[in-house]
Length: 165
Picture (cartoon, rainbow, N blue to C red):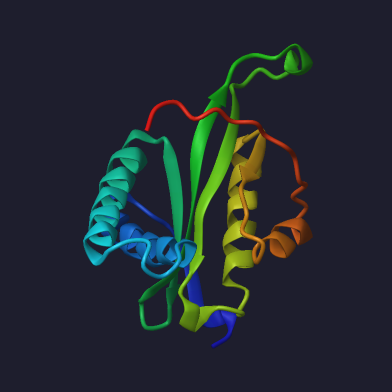
């Protein structure tokens, strides 16, 4: 299949089951065999569906789906919108500074190596620039890093402190 046989569309809250269904196999690629159970994956998928339904409707998350010519969703990517406080370095900006944290970039294995993740990321880049997003950020798997670097993403360090759980 060529890229012409795929279309990208903005997801809505009604797409939450589809987004959850694509997020579950992505999560299964993160864990080693035997680290979880089918019941945990089912619970994960259900929670992902609820998350997308609520957060898309709130406007806190934007998501995109790539659909095949057969109208099957085969790839997805999402952006969590994070409003930033004013900064001394950005006083000339009259609009609210928003960072879009990209997550859930996933392509079904049967549709990989066709440029779908690149096309999704280019769609997000175009949307972000048109929407006045300050910057895009993401964490990448080693497999995805060359793609993101080819799109202009740069490595940066973050520190974190886990609270609870």
